[in-house]
Length: 279
Image (cartoon, rainbow, N blue to C red):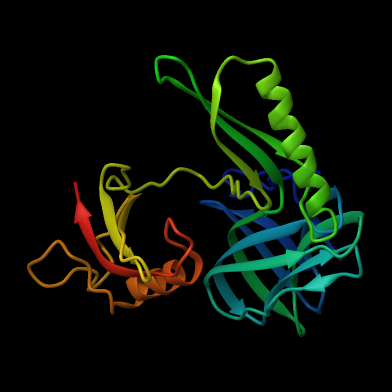
């Protein structure tokens, strides 16, 4: 497996990428674009992903700088092939694909529906389905030791067997350590996108959103802090306040996703009470 991709940002050249299907033009354009001109459908550029197992879930991020004409799409060969959503305008697009079989896969960006002329600023592909085992242990002085170990992809078919292996690993670790286990996580899906560091000067962990939420049944209140609060989003704060407007589109999307996924400490649904900016 060759993830993350080689030279996903086209910083100075096209290293790692190859023309596919003999496009009319495949060239590097300053300050960091892959430029494709194609007279026909299905031509563009590609990079091998190597051998990937069935159940691997790919996240593919495509940054389209310009579309002078035509359309383009992501294509993943192998396992029967797959074509992502057709794009005809600049923008940052994200695609997800669960691979159906063990196979050798290749990622391509190709003209779709005929002739096309486009420039790509960045393309990244990441494996979202790496299972993991994480353990947190504490010593006599209350100092903690935590580490995470990768496991094979967890699927519906192998879940119970992998959970049993995680239990056995925990027992094995405890058998050779005097520390006491505080927490064990058996992780079915682990995201390591490998994205570059943020460039904004305000992208700091101590510039935070404080999320306050309540468990619907027990009314217990909990908080969680999210670093890198983006205050440049239009309308994100109520006027003259450090409290977020929960009806603003980006914040409303966060609240909806949070309430749909998160449970309270007693396993009940939760409701977000407020989100406030802290520094």
